[in-house]
Length: 210
Image 1 (cartoon, rainbow, N blue to C red):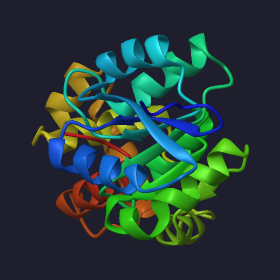
Image 2: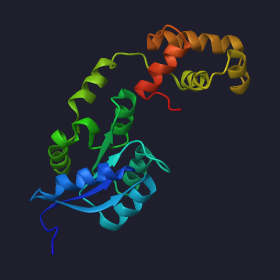
Image 3: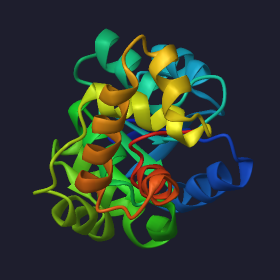
Image 4: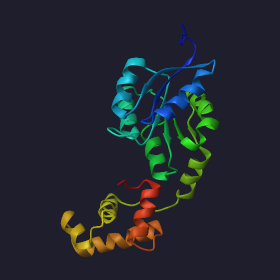
């Protein structure tokens, strides 16, 4: 019988079984780690965390039912010392910053899983924060950008759904002139040539989601 004494106890959370299997296979051959549980969405992750109290949780950012960010916040709210590494396919600076602000111990791109997962788990267990080099570059690239205001993000979400300025003004209970002003500011801050370009940039950077 395998005992977890002295080992780093890991919980794997991802809605794709193949990713969980990959994580399990990597951990299985490590003498200092053991997989204590798996979950396929955020709600299940919270339940599994309560059951197993893992040392480190490796969790996907994008999942059905409840996403990784919401699950991270819920877990950290209940267990402030929880060490959670976020996994994602996207190099989105906004999502990275959100995850770190919510208390993530690490941020790892799935493309780098085989190379960086084990050292990231060990670093997290030791209380160190780790971010994928590619993800770090994404943060640096946009570090000096003017952030969109909550009002501008509200307008941008509606632009992404194809609404015209008048429809946006009606929905947000504001004037069409105010919407036009926010659109100009959005284009300027994102360095976008038009509304479609702004939507593409915002989706890529994780500023909005469809």
